[in-house]
Image (tube, rainbow, N blue to C red; front, side, top):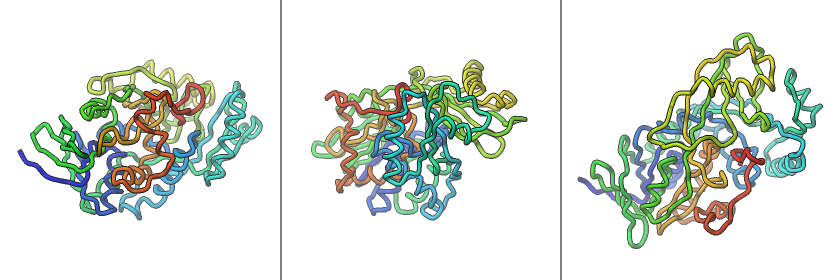
Length: 386
């Protein structure tokens, strides 16, 4: 058994933990990140990795905007190509969303997120061959796209190591021992003890039991969500879009495939015991939804798919902040965390090191639910839009 001291100890090397490690190491902070598998081996690696800033929350919209700007310079920053492709993304709404969509579009453009409000005629022009039954308004985010979740995480993680960070891969944190003043010690299943002046728990679906050891019972649940892939086959390709009536998102995957997933809540599961394969009825549900909206995709061919995990907060917004002296959490990103991670890591570094933080972060306080201060998010049941 060994004990080593660090300024900051991070639990989890998904894209959020890797980003926080990168930003802290960039500031000369001594940091160790502990990961039960390898970087992006959990839900991050199974993310659909959509990059968009179409948020109703202004702070998250700005963070997503800044993350897209990081993706544009990712190889320069990390030495790794994150596989970012700009596709643009159209959001399809029912008529009752018009006022809220109009307000969101105005707010997004005001902070440099190029977004176009589209009426039904504008949607028909942009989306030829779509059946727009039930759609009353849309929005087009010009700079949205997608990236490679493994490459993104690997780039941040490797650059952090080059900057002096240390990693313990294949190591499970079984215990957090809070210090009487701040921070504490991460104890792994092999008995290693990592003394840390500050601790950040970014363990996704495994965050809640770790936070409980620091005295915080966070109301986080875990949901199983599927991603299904199709070949274009003989179908003419369709553009990236999110259908809030059909309840799905859709984007290309390279040149030969497209993928889909749901935008509504799904069943809760045990993160250590869930079906990782996609079932035939799940494929059929998404295929039926998209062919109702884009009939030509009946000629597409099923390719495959997988299931992943979302750690979900009651309001589907992230849980970010201090839960005990010197112990912080970044969790509850509810399926929309990938797109935030590159730039959010800088804000996490601010919090952990006690530097001046963006006032917008205060709204994501982990204890807001106890105060009845849940945040608004998304549109109706599609709260994943944030």
